[in-house]
Image (tube, rainbow, N blue to C red; front, side, top):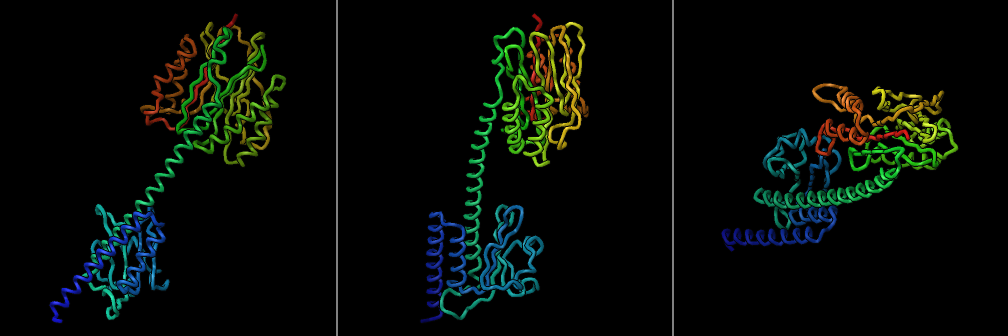
Length: 412
């Protein structure tokens, strides 16, 4: 057989080999084989079919370069390779013998997509004399193509898994948000009561949040209300707050004084948070007959009480540190007020008053105080605050949970 005929036959053999190889690789990918099996097939192809003695495969998996396949090598062959330094600058198939870092290898084959390197195959120790398809220089682009197919398949598989995890997480967060929303009371608890009006507003920064408010009757003559804020945000804050809410509901009964309640809640928060988080709390109880308002402020933003007759505002300031800040609360003072006139009270979390505008650190606080000084129902006051501060999901300046709890106290 002449040299020309032999060359034509070799080209035909290799063309058939490439088609067969591409078909097998495509079938493996379509069969959703695990990544390990894809890499094993790729390694077998390079080492057994193309007779390549040494192979390294680096892939970029944010934020690091990882060596995901190695064959025919010892640690000393690749330990000195730093992908960011030695591989990333390489944009084309490169003969590596002149680089001491790649002393045991012959070629570096980059896989690039949209001008960004995805992977690098480093090969060496060819066995050209053995039977089979010799991995000569003209086959390097085919190796590059195969690597590209494999890497894209691996990346697509990774993205699919990430998307599935994100979808599962999204559904879990939606369920958690629904559960949390079910735990907070609705304002219609007091809708037929002419002694009091309660207006809440709650908007967590994420799907779930670390803010909490509550209100309910303790008896026919008394009701309680509270607002609380866990340090931090997200799921861990929401879980701690849910546990806190359950504890408060279980402990707070009509014959328990609030000082004892707060001390017990502090012990529970210390135990459950392991010192990593704390909770600020404002809790009050109001007697409809005596018009006595008793409260404890455990490190929370001072609620604002507005007297509708005198037009004066009063801040219900802290009585003790936040819950979980100390193992035991050293001293506790309960505030007591007699409401002689119709009043409105606004409780809020720091996500409201820490809103800034035009460099004004106390912008949110000033808006709250301004609206509270207006002689309008608490529902209108809350709506005005929400409008003035642009409290909505689309506002990118919001960085925390937002909670408002307002009460109108009527005098019969």
